[in-house]
Image (cartoon, rainbow, N blue to C red; front, side):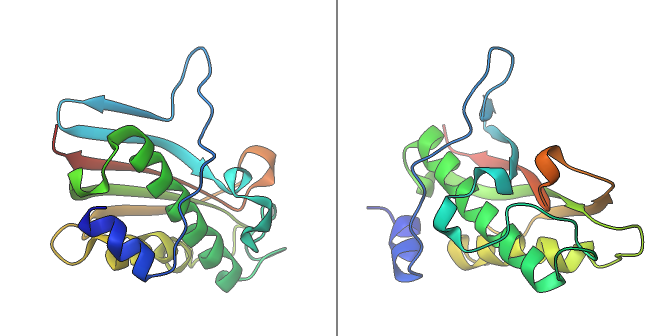
Length: 159
């Protein structure tokens, strides 16, 4: 077990076994050189017992705190995808970019606070040398199956 996986265990995080299922024209991640691009991860991918909402619009159906919890759960799902593709999470050299899309009413303006659920989880796991990343958080009119949040990301990894 590597350092990152020990840290995950210390935090009480259990990585999921279920991954984004590839289709004929897309996959859960693409490795290009030393960059690993993760496909969008959404709440529809969360385990049934994750204890967070899988559907709903921020500012109408869900609170900011619930959105944060969804984003954090999605970050854990992303770690599972990373582990699947890399074999060892210590291969992550840097979290490069996170894009969080928040399904919300037009008046909801705290997308950044929702997407903090991802950024803060990655910081807890990878620490101050690896985790700080560029980030965008945007509000969208809708997501597939009315999911509250979707996140895609880019990681610099050792090959």
